Length: 286
Image 1 (tube, helix red, strand yellow):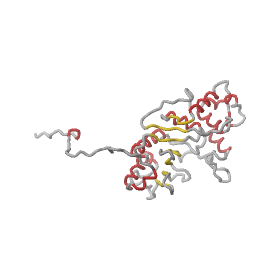
Image 2 (cartoon, one colour):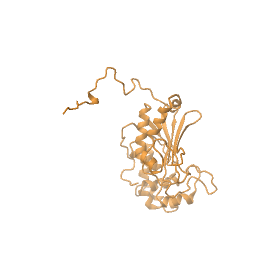
Image 3 (tube, one colour):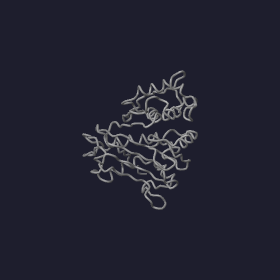
């Protein structure tokens, strides 16, 4: 019997090897993406697509179309090219995408994640994003639909959530790191809209550019005998005493105005592949 010669790609030494990395990597910014070929841009977007989630909701992971041949993944740039967004639609409830991401170039030659959300369209919806007359609330940051917020709190949601999530957030952040690596960006920024979002980013490895001491003061304020703890007096659904002992509960209380100062100015960043180990609320359950 003739034996097949053993071979390995690792043993190959081509005369002209193809480099796998740029010699002088230059950061790529969102405003520059349109000058790159369509396939490169398509591949970048595809990195962010959770294939199992697409299949679960009847979306072809290659063509990105549903059973009726409708494209279910949309991407787009702002007119000035500084903002890029992606949405994954669904056939169950078109009011909310399965996933939405918005990235933006910053004035400091960095890229920020402006918004990221994942929604389970099979779960009940709470209209915290709109008033009873249909006018927007900007997720409760401009005005508040108190009845919807109280129902969302009771259902276990956090401020700003209209539905239960899909539990893919950790993987989405990992995929974002892959995208930023492909764009030669070593770090990226976030500005959390709520207290619980900042804690979530902490626990996934982000560091504070601004606001760490502010976050520490919040934690200290909710400890037994402290000022914020004393304000958890049951005067509103969002200030029940038990809420002081959870991240989600604290976030609702802060959203309800329990602090004398407003939630503002917290900025964070993530270094690719590095967990910063920051913990401003040690031992506090979600």
